[in-house]
Image (cartoon, rainbow, N blue to C red):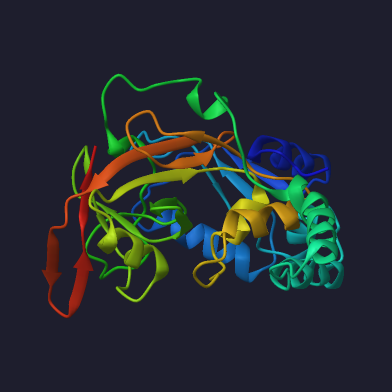
Amino acid sequence: MAIKDLRTFIRALEERRDLIRISEPLSVDLEVAALLRELMYRGGPAVIIERTRENTLPIVGNLFGKWDRVMLAMEGSDPETMASKLTDLVNLRIPQGLFDALKSLNELRRFSQYFPRSVGNGPVRELRWDSIDLTRIPAIRQWVHEPGRFLTFGITFVKYGDYRNFGYYRLQVIGRDRVVMHWQPWRRSAMYGELSERAEVAVVFGPDPVTMLMAGVSIPHPLDKLLITGVLRGEGVELVRGSTVDVEYPANAELVIEGELTSEYVRRGRLVITWVFTQ
């Protein structure tokens, strides 16, 4: 059975004494990033930073800084076994005749437990902010010469027709309700955003750990990354449809920002930044 959400994963880390809590406030301007780098380089524990000098929400970091924490997220699944399942899934072929059709039906039934499932509600809907204030979310400045503060671990979900994708794209906060989406134009999500009449997105923070890991993996079009995530989790990801956007995202996430890309382009020096979105 998969670890269904981030909180279950955090409790498991605490039971293993592989997570520390820091109550002294740190600044999101360089200090948080410096601590997380040091913990990762030293093979240190995961960490929850309970307070920041800027009074943002708490921060959890270095979740996957060691391989044994990755394996914990995967429930100890053997990578070779998972690779074999994924190979079987990719090699499913169009049936030729009745016998092949019956065989394919059995194969699809075997994989059906991994399909993403739509649900009506979930923990991500438990609390709704009355007004948008992105400065409450801990956007950090990692390096001295960075142009601003960035959300670095938000997972952007985007769709185009029947296709969908999700991944990590740095989000530069430029106001209480505006961020700049940093993604390269050749990326799959960028392609979907370009092709859509309304480029709606949902930026999710803190879904289950396997979904967090898979957000950093490139999957070629048209494969459904959520289906592959389900195979690795051992069960399908539960999804809710957005309240203000036609995009589905994990129901067990901690936080979501729903918004629409405005198709504005921002250029700063040599860095070309594509699209601003607002909700």
